[in-house]
Length: 302
Image (cartoon, rainbow, N blue to C red):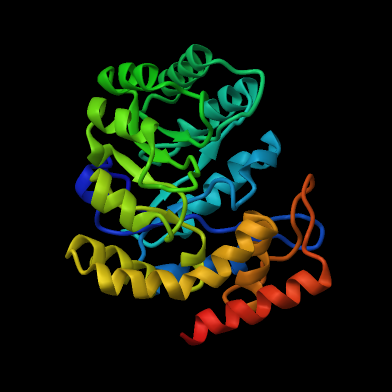
């Protein structure tokens, strides 16, 4: 596992995969199938793996957190960068910081919590977490008002932020007042687009931010890497072609549920048997799973 401090250049070297976490029927961790997913991503040239929402880290028990971190640290390739998550509640993230600080992960992402938060409160919570972890953390901006730009900038200036995952969904990603303010106050190379392949061109080309995270990358890491390289080389026609290939699966994720659809797609594409989903969410209905399987196979054959 790559344990070096994360630089903007490291972030720009690979799109960031956000894979599901495979489990057995009894909800225990399925080690072999998670390794299969890792090796598929690495074979496709993707060597940054972020375990967050798609891995259902929101619902981990504190009792299994250490086991999962041990697995991730010991299973990734030597040059793969692995970023686990913590939270979303304050008590949970602080308990997890006490565990994660004993590992060599260069950073940990804090999952966003909806409701019962204020921007200064979130900033204080992230500060407490980073100080207890002993490392800068990944801030995940997913909802308007969760963390205001000035509060985030203060943490960046204090060296508490490794990088920022920006994932507020807009009808038109080119019109984004928050992101425009953010890139004026924080180095854009510390910001990563966090909504998959579809807004990646606009975010990287028009706002100058650095790389992107994706879920559909778990099926075709080679194509997602090609998309990043096309954007970086300003071959936007090729980038648009690749986005179209990912679009049908991304549309189903938006229509049904991003986590549940990806969990099913990875299995139906033959990448890894993802198994049971941890409550409080459920697997797809049979008709939904069939639709996902058709689109997933098409993506694999593209």
